[in-house]
Length: 122
Image (cartoon, rainbow, N blue to C red; front, top):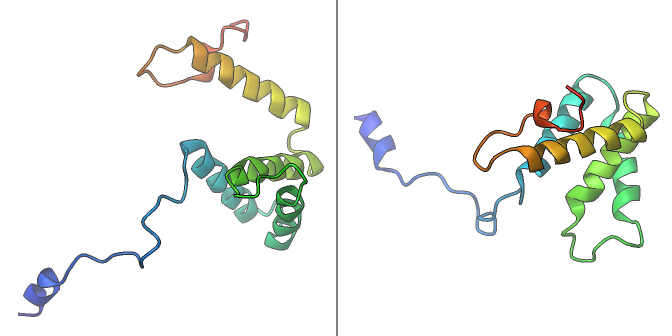
């Protein structure tokens, strides 16, 4: 029976050295996904993305061990959003502050919703 042979094979595995998660925090995966989605929508090309990201990770203050890679990723994304007129730095900063306030105002274990921002005036 061919089906039985498939069931008896070991589960597929990633090659050695790929056991660690790609993203250390959920926000890193979200920033990655947003970048892919914005590229798919035509906001920028991969060569433009690579140029902006490369400039960010080569900053003198960048960590030599790369632990701040996704912070540079996010900074590159913000620069492209601003350059394309999608969202300026002030808008991005204001939204980030609103999410931060909402996170602090949300009880533990509950989903963080922007409407929980006590500074929103709602």
